[in-house]
Length: 195
Image (cartoon, rainbow, N blue to C red):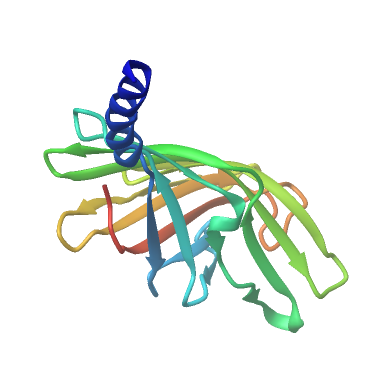
């Protein structure tokens, strides 16, 4: 009888901890201000309805929370291009990052490997890029001698959960549509909820 009582007591102590440790899934729905720019010479708008799901761990005592993004969590439709081609952006591997409070809104940072796939033409192919994303500032050089880029995001606005997350990298020397150009992207939109 004594053993059963101890097991029951242990179960009561464990259950609240496991329930409280569940992840929170937050969806960032992108708006019409989301785009990819190739050295400011060509700008491609991300299709409406695009979204990214973040899986948040329970917040720490300072209010910060880590998160992960799986490739299946990124839903961006192919971008139509001239000549019937499409450019598809996806996540090549899982990404991880953090969100933490500041005096001027919540800061969000993560590193990702982005896959860009060109289809429907004579130069089809896929390239992968390591790209940092943040609500702060990112910069990238060009490989072709033209000026690089620098872009600043916008921290999460409490209550409306709006943010602009930015990323930057250098296009491959033989990649479409601007070889060697400094590339940046703006992911503009609202979260449905945050920790």
